[in-house]
Image (cartoon, rainbow, N blue to C red; front, side, top):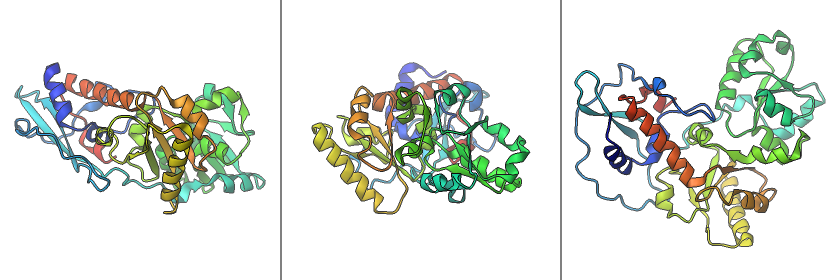
Length: 336
């Protein structure tokens, strides 16, 4: 096991954003040590930590993200300290499965032709709010419902993450569920487009709150615009969110809204269907920012729970689990 001081030194040397690309996690679940077994293809290299720990130059808008991650561990056979190097994808490099994506406005038109919404969230979440007439099913059960082969249907979740839904949609289409889609942007985008939602209106606030594990899964998709309103320097923010764009955190609400609109409009001109994530220092301003910004921009808007501090702690906790297990994450997880 790596001593806590050694681990802290490692965390200072290795940007948290590097760790954030190592393993996509299922939402709201931290990774257990049992999930961290390396495959034989990830051969350790016995070496010391880099000799130079000099501070890196401040990041700029064109700074290239790291192309590989390094995780220090103890080799079980030799009992020596080793560093595992694992290739990383570029943040923003992953694309959505466009063939499966059904924009909310198109979905609303197709409801008249019999489109069915299949809500794959947990039953308690479905009970709080849902699209009227939708069917609640676990995602793994959808393929067992033969009647859906004769229907057009859209898989639905909150909209904060959709990678698993896209993969399932592809599998369903290959299994003769030709009418399978994913509601683009989920319930959040449906609500933004003025779609009807039944249930507890107060609970709808949860739609826009993004968990740390959810962000870990989504961070390298290309349709996210991550706006930092934190007081921390942008170079510090980019240690965990390399693609973050700074918005003046000292501005009053009116100026802040105008600044966010300007950045979003500039990115939207590139023709990308955006999801916008607001990141503050610790999440304490989320409710206030939500009230000020919701409805101001036409894109789906989310706020990171715990803010920058919470996301740093999330990855620090994951690194502690890996170190305690005395083995690195599995190699394929870097590009999964």
